[in-house]
Length: 212
Image 1: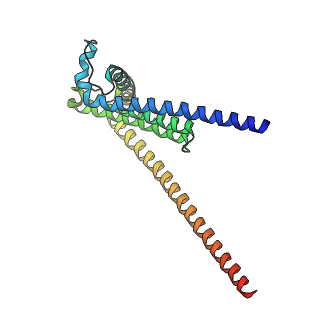
Image 2: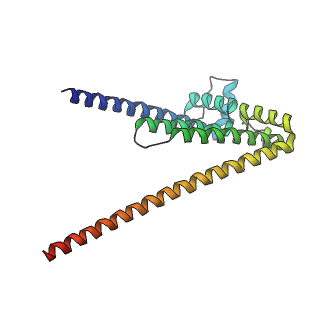
Image 3: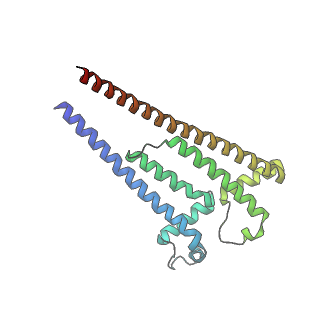
């Protein structure tokens, strides 16, 4: 009886995790759609800043516009798309359907958001055409990053810093990819060896049976 109760509690806990993870993944997907929509409908929705009673063209309505506008303007701009991506991965991990190493996802998403926002903010300073649109391409965080970087090391130092950090991250990714490929190859090799051993043992068994 105690074992059955413990098993039911375990199943109930797993079901709750699945439901909460599914809800988080769905909400994050809605957030991702709102952010993507903002890059296509945000120019027209700028009228909501002065006339909030007007209808929104964002795919998720006024709520989609306001949350997308806040994230893009006040965080990492275009790189803020990685925020709902990370949340979707978190929801899937909570659901328990796929094994996801969240610390890897968090690390990669943070590195990319910080670098992309700084890079886009630097480009915006160099090209006036990027300053005329409705999108602040670096976001508030990116603008602060690049202004501090230029203040410390100048434009050339900023270019070198962005280039070196990009190369380091590419090397890091390359090492991760190579490690993953090696693991897959090793697994396949082990599976093939085990299948070969099984077939050999079956052949030996059949031979012994025929001899007997």
